[in-house]
Image (cartoon, rainbow, N blue to C red):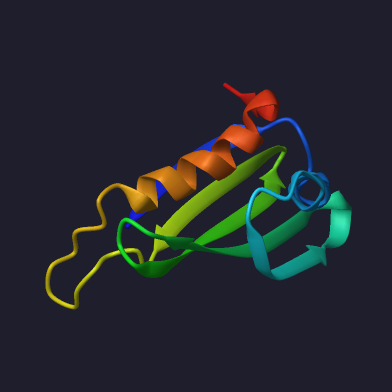
Length: 109
């Protein structure tokens, strides 16, 4: 499992639109909520097959702008090879990094 957290200069809605447009990987689920006072949140679930682990992995993106800036959290799971040995040969880190890279031009602070 690998995690990354950062702030971006765009809204959660713009994140969804951007990631759909760049088509970096399979998007399995998108959930977007418009809340009072201009607040938004989204959840996106991505899936990718990794040959190095012979397994499907998922990466969940959670974005919200509850505190003026948009916070993005990425969590990749499911890439390890076995039930007891949680070794994924860097697949989780690679997955998180690829999505973060596609948002890199928007990262602030």
